[in-house]
Length: 258
Image (cartoon, rainbow, N blue to C red; front, side):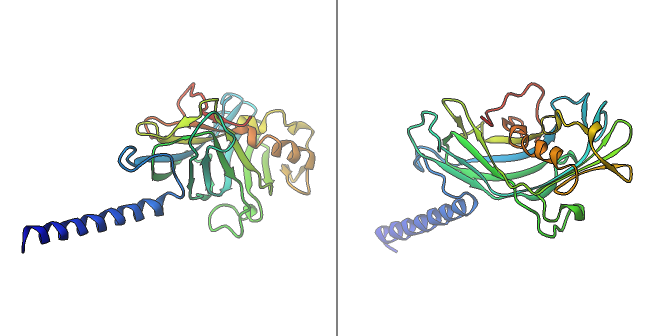
């Protein structure tokens, strides 16, 4: 084989390899822009989800709540979108959409994570849709037709069940300069603050049935409306530098409801 023919064959192989790599990245990440392949090589990232309480002494998670303890928090979550929509002073448009995780118990303490690859970019906004679970294969049967099922217990042992069919698209906004998803800062987590969701709900005034408090579309509807009005305010995006899916004490949001 002549040197020219060998070089031509090698060049064709490199082109095919490059196209295969682009195809894999495009499958994992939808629509991310904001750089060139040579100037901004793809970075690996991870989006985790965690339920917590900003007031653990009062509203506990799994145990320890002086007023109430959240035992389970089942959510059905759709695709998460990062974008430059809304401005925040960024000159380049960029979007990143990650698969929804579906149904899960976010009070269980498990590390739920979605890994991804993307081109480095800065974002202004995060959108997280809540969706209704249709005959879920995991979780209590009461979750069917609902997007949220929160099971808790008052300090006196009274069971509390909150079932919501609300389907908000939670929108979180970053500061004036946005937040970046480049190397070293591509690990983030969405945090659900049960204390914010439950703050101010007057369980003492709730009607009880069979020794329990049921809050849904038919019972204690005023409490349900108050709970649903707090859903967006209880969600925030944080950096997860060590990638352990745990909200570090004192962590400040990099994007939150505004």
